[in-house]
Amino acid sequence: MDSLSGIGVFVLVADTRSFAEAGRVLGVSASAVGKSVARMEARLKVRLFHRSTRHIALTPEGEKFLERCRRILCEVEAAELELSEASGTPSGRLRVSLPRYSGLFESALASFLKRYPQVELDLDFTDRMVDVIGEGYDAVVRTGEMDDSGLKRRRLGPFRRVLAASPEYLEKHGTPKRAADLLRHCCLHYRYPSTGKLEKWPLKMGPTAQAPELPLTLVCNSVEMRIFLALSGLGIVCLPDFTIRNELASGRLQIVLDERTRGNGTMWALWPASRHPSPKLRVFVDHLAQHLFE
Image (cartoon, rainbow, N blue to C red; front, top):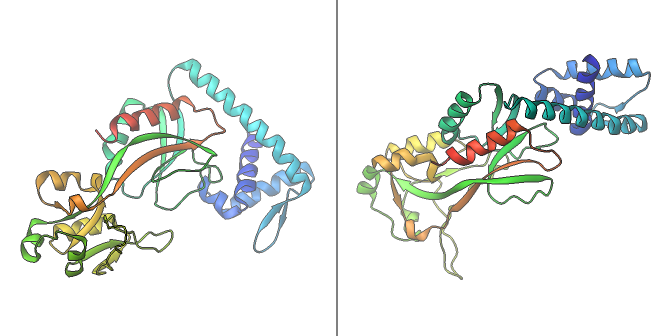
C-alpha cells in the first residue's frame, strides 16, 4: 500500500509540476510530498524529476514511469468501481469544488449526507477557475458557458442575475426605470477574486447604446456583505436570484429594472471525461440536479 500511495503522489506531482500544489491537494506539506518522491527515487535507483528553485520537470525515466503509473491507477479505480457497483451502496470520498457562495447548496448537501452516509465529501468553496484533472477533483460545480472538451457535464438548473434593493432604499432614492437612472443611485459591485475585474451588470441596451459607467459606491468580493448592505438600505445590488431567494420572498428586497436586464444563467456539474462516473459521483450529481433549485 505504501508503494501505491507513493505512485499516487508521484502522478499528482507530475500533473501539477509542483510539490507545494500537490501538498495542498493532499492536505500535507510540500516537504512531505518531496520526501515521498525522494523515497520512491531511492527505491527505484533513478531520478524522476529535474528540480530547480523555480520549477520541476520530468526526466525521460520519469516520463516512462508516469505512463505505467497512470495505467496502474486506472486499474485500481476500475477495481474499486467494480466492487462498489457490486455492493450496491455508493461509498468513498468525493472531492468537489463549488462556487464560493454556499447558501444555495446547504439544504441539498445536508440531505445528500443523510441519504448516503457512506460517502465522504471533501468540499472546496471557491470562485477561481480550478484545474479539475490537475488538482485531483472528482467534480466541480460552476456557472456560465463550458467549453472544455476534457470534461463531461450535466445541467443542474437555471438562474437569473437580478438587480435588487430594499423598499427603504427605493422609498428614499426612487425606483430606477431605465439603465441611465442608475447613475443617480448607490451601486454595490462584485470584484472577481481570480481576475480582479468588476462583474458587469446585465443591462439591456440598444444596438448603438453604451452601458452607463455605474457609480462604484462599494466594490468587494463578498456576496454576503453586499446582501447585508442592500438589506440595510445602502444601495442597489446585482446578484444571482438564488442568493436572495428568501429576501425576495419576504419582501425585504425588491427586484428593479426587471424588464431591462438579461441575466439568465445555468449551473453545471462537470467531471473528467476520461473517467467512468463512479456510483458515488453519479448519485451526487443526480441529487444536486433533483434538489438544488427545488
